Image (cartoon, rainbow, N blue to C red; front, side):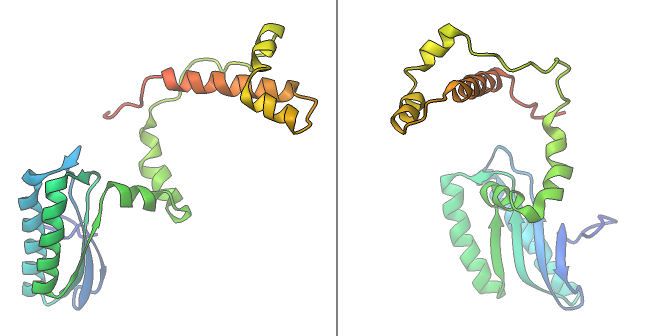
Length: 189
């Protein structure tokens, strides 16, 4: 990373040698969607990086724009054309790490520490509610579950001991309903 003291030259993070060739990651917070109003900031960011590189004797070989959202249709069309023109004009590779790409990268095993350290901490405080015990399946619930598709399939497959499966199915359904009716995680703190 480059410390913003007094400026970061338009470089949020880089790999390489500032006396030679570098790859630059430029982070922009466009939320909830990247749209036409953000295009000038994108153009200005690349220009700043390239101008600074020329003044300080290093070469930008790759520029990666990182945004936590997706681009709308018109902005995606603009990006595709603009990216190709800039790559030809400046002999560099331009890439986009948007919401989908960043999510995919954060789900890899290599990103476990990053994901836990920066994202999972924002899920809010654990509930003070006491954990609930699993519910036993009474006769009425058991008779209702007799017509459940998975029970009929298990019987058809020759399974005869189904009480455990019924209990697990019922409790999984209770948990799923409880989760679905909880408030969503806070979006800001």
